[in-house]
Image (cartoon, rainbow, N blue to C red; front, side, top):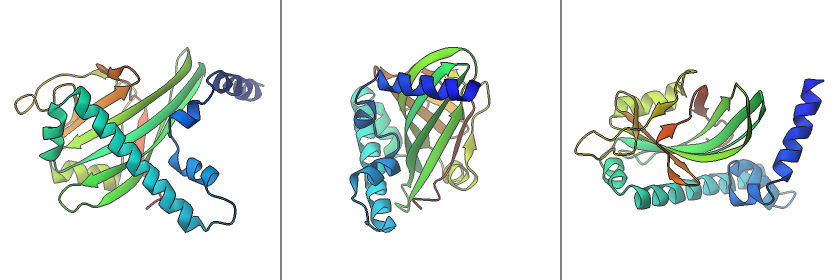
Length: 207
């Protein structure tokens, strides 16, 4: 009985935010399927989806640089970076977040498209949308993220702290050796990262 009730509440919740999906392309592949007419080859949809992910990443970086100018220097001196657009819904004790993004190796300019998923526990209600920007200080941390994936534990909500190489990473949280993370919300750069129980992995449909 719980599943039908939760689905109904999810529909009502999303319906109360008109135009939300149109404002936030949290699932570029789905957007591409809706935009392109029937009969268009899958390859065309994949190309369009990749383009939308790239546009999202550029927009997220532009916003980050405006809010935190030092982040530009951090990324320019990094081995690479990753940008994700996320969307989540929380209904009482059930909820989850999904998202798509891309990793850029600054040494080779290689782009790897990825996905993320998060299951939320505890009591709550509402919709959240964020953009996550990872910065990798060395090739090893970048390679591990791309090839092995990434998973934050259940207690991974941490406060973002300034520091590192003359303040380049001010506003970011150090989440692992050589890995920094910025979280952008509707109101700006978040002081607390809400990434507990989140997994990042390669997107088989876009690579």
